[in-house]
Image 1 (cartoon, rainbow, N blue to C red):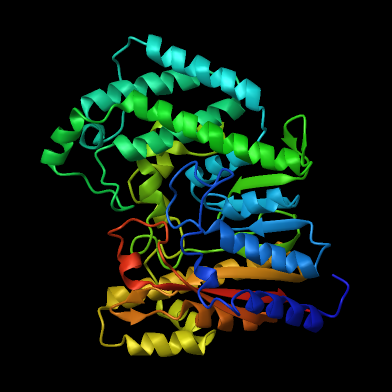
Image 2: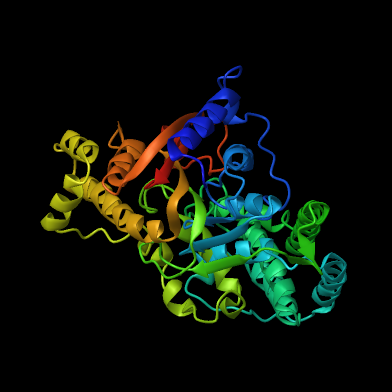
Length: 448
């Protein structure tokens, strides 16, 4: 990054703004947000739109061709990771959700396509030849979330996956099982929160849902997605013996704690828009699939028993998950942002617990900033995709508050984009989709 930063900022800003010059809704990508090249392996909550990520990365690379490493501290389903790989960049990502780590491990390869095809057929044979009827898992309320038929069929799949020798193949199969569980459990798919279907609905589905056929269909779909990503990387000369040529590092980690010496040229991320209990419950969404997945195939240091001790445990460990907040913490975080102070004052006649949820979220978000900056080289660029949710009917100005928090740390905003959300991949009955119609994209630079 040799050129003058102010000149570079202006060029990036102008380039991004020019994209919507003739089409004011350019950034919505309405009708154009296809999920190909591995982006559609699993319906993860609130996924970033690949085309948005593509446009931003390409605009920045047009000015900074020397960018080599990208970081996403809230890596989620790996949208930024995949788009970075397609462009031949090294990538570093972290998340507090084991299911997110698994998804990114799969998308990072290796890409032994022919061998995977053979292993997939062998897996199907093992499942079809499994005549056992015992359950492979045991957790509280398992019969609430799964019918007897589902428990038997999913157990056949789990046993058959565990019989696979190669961990990279097992991970691929676990993802297909996770999506199968999402579609065939007794939890509603109309929300990412865990809510059981009605008894009538469950009884109707017993004779309709064919669990093994569903799994086989997802396997075939995911294989084609994976093959498309493989071909894209191969055509870009980014693979060697099926392995991605650049560095990929995915870690189970809390964004509030820096734990790596890796330095990125660019950070692109989309943090939670609020605490996961009241916005998007990533942990709840992962709870049922993770019951069936071997954690040793994700990270053998993970404590499965503690992470899944309740449906809310993962969410309670995320930003704003710890609601208890003392007056000293409230005073400290409010002093960091005039916009936050004004917002909290606007809620003074609202329930105390609602106010505490907002404050605890921003306390934790503020705690993330310094560790995240540790990952970024001086002069490096950051892109944050943000949604301004509502609390008690009042829009939370997340973008303005975050701008305040960064400016306290010598990080300057040089471009701001707004995109309409035509059909963000969230559950239909999630409160967030009912109150959010747009996202704000902030581009900033550290120091310089």
